[in-house]
Length: 369
Image (cartoon, rainbow, N blue to C red; front, side, top):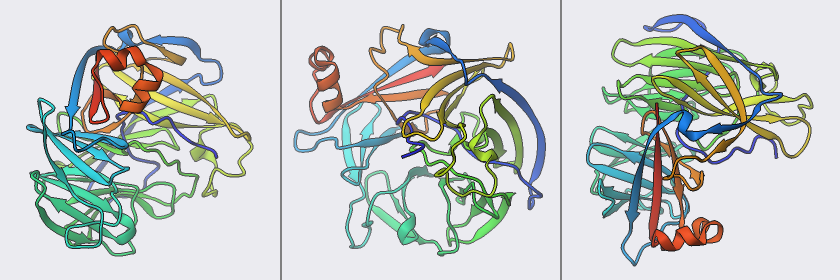
C-alpha cells in the first residue's frame, strides 16, 4: 500500500492554500525551502541538531502491561501514555510512577467504542471517537466528566483544545475544508482557513496540530509541504514555510482524492519538528511500486541552508537506537520509545541493562538546538 509512514515522533500541522478567513488576520510571507530529494547525502549526525536528551522510565504495576503505545502527553504534573491496543490511557507522575488509568472501552456511561485521538485540555484529558461523533472528557484521576456530541456534518483529521475552552479542528485534501474552531456543543464558531482544492491526502500517525512553548499553534499541510502558525489569542494565521522539493509534491495532483493510481514519483512530508534554529523533517517518496524511499531534511534558519540525508547517525551515547516514534505534545523535540518486545528482539543486551519488562516503557526525548 502506498504512503505507509515510519511511526515517528513529534510533528507539526496544517494545510494548504487558503482563501478569505472569518474574523482572522492573515499574512502570507512564507520562506521558500528548496529540497534535493533525488540525491540526498548519506548521513546526518544526531549531534548536529540535537542539543540534549531526556529519558523517561514509565513503570506499571505488575498486574498491568504496555500493549501498543502511540502517544505521550505531558502537562506540569503528569505524563500520559495512550495505549492504542488496550484502548486506555495510563497516567504517571513526573518520576514515572503509575497513578491511574483513564478511560475504558465499552458501551456504558463514560466508555467509548475505541480509543481515538487523545489530547489535553484545562485540567482534563479528552479522548475523541469521531466515528461515533463524541469527545469524552476525564479528570486526571480518571473520573468521567462528560461527553460532547458532534454533528455528522463535521469531519476533521486532527483536533486540539484551545485556551478559551473551544476546539481547533483541521482537515485537508477535501473541498471546502480547512481550519476552524468548534465550541463544546459541536458548533463551528470561526473559520480560520478555507480550502477548495481536492488532492490526495496522506494519513500519518503523527499529530497535525502542535503547540509550542509560547502557545503558538503550528499547522502543516503534509501533502503540499506548507507550514502555518496560528496565534489563538490574537486570532492571527500566517504561512511560515513552503517546501519546494525536486520531486513533485503529492498535493500537486489536483482533482485526485487518492494516491492510488498515481504512477509519477511524488513526495510528502511525514514529520516536522521545529526549534529555534532548525526545521527537521522526514519525507517519503513514492512512485508506481509497492515500496518507496525516505529522506531526512535539516533546514538551518540562521544560514538558510537545507540539506537532505538518507539516514541518521546515532552519535549521542544516550541514543543506542532510533527505536519507535511517538506522537507527543512536547515542543521542539523528537520523541522515541523502546517497548518490551522490540528491545528484547533487537537489543537483548540493552534489554538486560535497562531491566526491562512488559510493564516498563523507556521514552527518549531528543531536544533540538
